[in-house]
Every structure is written in structure tokens, then in C-alpha cells.
Image (tube, rainbow, N blue to C red; front, side):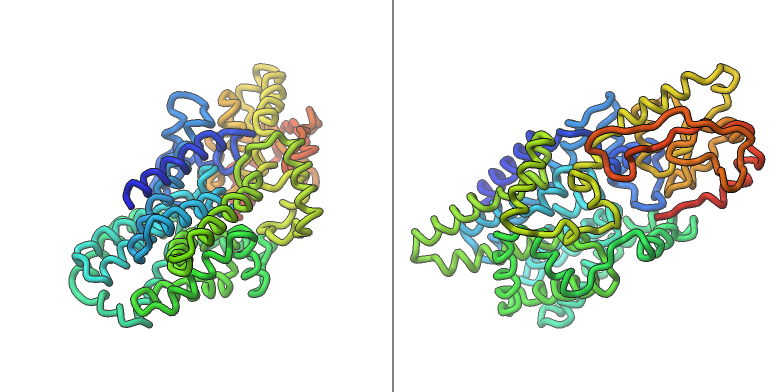
Amino acid sequence: MKRLAWASAALVFVVHAIGNPHYGFFRDELYFIICGRHPQFGYVDQPPVTPLLAALTQLGGHSLFLLRIVPAFFAAAGAFTTVLLAAEFGGGIFAGALAAIVFLFTPVLLSFGMKVGADEVGLWTWPLLAYLIVRITKGADPRLWLAAGAIAGLSFESKYSVLFLVAALGAGLLLAPQRRALRGRWFAGGAAVALAISLPNALWQAAYGFPMWELLEAGQHGKNVIAGPLLYLAQQVLITNLFLFPLWLIGLVWLLRSSAYRFLGYAYVVLIAEMIVFHGKHYYPANVYPILIAAGAVQVEAWTARMPPARIAVAAYALVLGPVFVPFSLPLLPEATFLAYQDRLDDVLHIPKTALATEHGREQAALPGDWADMHGWPELAAAVARVYDALPPEQRSQAVAVASNYGEAAAIEFFAPGVPVISGHNQYWLWGTRGYSGNVVIDVDGDCGAKQHLFRHAHRAGTFNAPYTIGWETGVPIMVCRGINVPLAQLWPEIKHYE
């Protein structure tokens, strides 16, 4: 089974290595890189692991390929662990192969492995945490709790949503006979390891007034689309492939009916309930699905044990229909070809674009939000750089670009490093004015504070447009503002924008 696990990991890695580095850098990827260039124990909107990994890939210069090798690695590790988990559930070669196929073609998991993001590490760590706990409950060395604690801590330093998984797993264990595994010094030791790894970031958040909590609260009041319980459950079906989701659903039922693994079924139910109650985005719990996929593959293997033709039919079904949604998770198709494919699929499936919306306005772009946000950034940076370079030398020496959001700011800093840039958005606000007075400002997507009469002189130096960009990054004005009436340092607290 280990050979199959390695083969599955290699296949997933190769698919991502070939399919990932297209279109361009994603908005958040640019931001992660810039954050990682300022190493800290935490950031306003994220723990440190993903930014540090992103920045490391760019030490030798700009490379989209090297950047996206990172999520490709975690996707491969996730496939490897999913196959091992299927084996731990009692599955054989067919179960492992089916689990690997469905893992590969599950859109949300494919997307996590496609671009750098906070969810990439969970592709590996969430199923690995379940794998370790399953082994412990079956009588393996309880010292594995130390490894489980380390994995939980690493997950926390990647994305805070692992807290919901840990709570769900704890609830599942307490509701099942396997609660006995929570007794003893090794479980306590594992908890201590998790806390020790998580502590630096937790202390950083505390030192800055828990900005992540402030950000999440702001997102609930205007930015995020809040899905009701029924829509949230429907979204789980859509993000896990309309054709392949029955496998994880079978896995959920199998887990709930299994005395040995029922705690995992309980954990899934609790996790989804947590997400609904706290209005999590539909993809927040998605790294739990490899666990259910592995379980479902074991059940299907058992059903078809004496029916080789049925196994061939199941594998063929997964291989034929699984790739239908791949162009929505891997940037493989040229833009025009993708749009034609999207229109054709819409004519057949009639899935509203708003069904999977997580933030207001993202569905307004011609391309899906992720694809749109991979376009226009070098061009925006070049447009700002032209305005900056056109300033007289005495003005250029004190000029700074002010971006309306971290995507614009990071793009300028990454693609036009000669242009100083600040922003009031998230981590950029915490970095402050960087010593600039604000007397000469290049205002990107702003109006020089016209209503407040903030500057004595203002004129529009340019307008940024590029095909396929996200809706609100089209028609962006680039203003030059001179003669600030209030020192920028005095204004800074007012332009704080955590969202």
C-alpha cells in the first residue's frame, strides 16, 4: 500500500507542477510574499508559516513555478496520507486507488494545492492528524500523541481554523468509547506540544489586540456572503465535485456506523455545525474531506469485492466525470477557451455563479474570482511606476504610493520595488507610514481625500485598465496629490482597514 501511496503522491505533484504556474500571481500570493519578507511570529490576518514559505521561494527572483511548488508538495503529501488512511480503515489497493483519484479531482482540494494559501498545509496535516488518532485509538504507541500535538501546532501556525477541527475531534472522541485514548500523560504531552508551537503566534495576536478577531468581525458585516444552513450544505456538495461527492457521503455514513471510527463521523458533523453557527466560508472545513473520501473508498471496495466489472465501472466513472471541474481549479485553459467552457457547462448544469460566492462582488468579473485575481498586477504596478517616475526629482524623493488594499500594495512592492508604497489595509496598516509625510502621494484607486479637502492640489495622472481583472480593479484612478493639510502620521489611525 505504501507504493500506491508514493505513486499517488507523485502523480498529484506532477499534475500540480504542470498545471499550477499559469495566468499569474494571485492577489493573496503577492501579499504572502511581502509579509514573509518581514518575518514575524504573526500577522494581522494570518499565522506565519505560509508567508515565510512564500517568501523563501522568491529569494532567487520572481518565479511563479517555484512559488506553486509549495502547495503542490502539500497536495502530494495529502494524497499520500489519504491512501494510508484508507489502508488504516482496512482498505486494499482498490480503495487506496479510488481514494487517490477522488482526492485529485475534488475541486476544493485541487484549488488548495494550486495556489499558495493558508489552507495548503491543512491538505496534509488534517488527514494526518486523523490518521495518527485512529492509530492511537486502535492501540498504537500513545506517544504518537506527541506527533499529533506537533501536527496540530503546525496547522495552527498555518491557519486558525484547525481549532474547529481539534474541537470537533475532541467532541467526537468524547461521544465515543474511544474517549479512553484521551487519558494519560501522553495525551497531555501532545496538548502541551501543540500549545508550545502555537504560543508565539497567540502571544503576537494578544500583543496587537487580537487583530484577527477584529478582522473576522468586520468580514461578517458587509464583506462576506453569509450562507444559511441549507445553502452551506449544498455548497459542500458543489466544492467537492457534483459527480464525486457521493463517495465522501458514503464515507460519512460508514464512519457513523463503525464502532471503531464513529468518532470521526461525529467530528465531521460537529465541524460542519461549527462552521454554520460561526458563518465560516464554505471552504474553511474542506481539508476534512480526505478523511471521508478514504472511508468511502473502503466501503465501495467492500461492496464490489466480488464484482470486478463494478470496480471497473466505478473507476471509469471517477476518471471520466472527475475532470469536468478541473479547469475551475487548475489554470490550464487560455482565458477565452475557459470562458467558452464555462458557458457550455453553465448551459448543462445551470449552477448560479452566486451559489459559491464567499465575498460580495467577486462574482462580477468575467472570470471566476480566483482566476480574475491572477490578472493585471504587473500592469498595475507598471502604471503606478510610470506616474512615480514622471514626478519631478524634488517631489519623487518624498513621494509614496497609497494603495486601497493589500493586493494593490503588494503588487506594487513586488513588481515595482523602486516605488515606495503604504496602505491602511490589514498588515500594511500595522507597518505604518514608513516615515513618509504624505506631502506627495500617488493615490491608487482613491480621490486624494476630496471630500475632506485633504490636499491642496490633486490631479488624475492615469487610469488603470486590464482585461480579465477582478471587477473592482478595473478603471482604477491613479491620482497625484500634493500639499497635505494634515500630517499623514496624524491621519493614520483613521485609515485603518481590517477586513
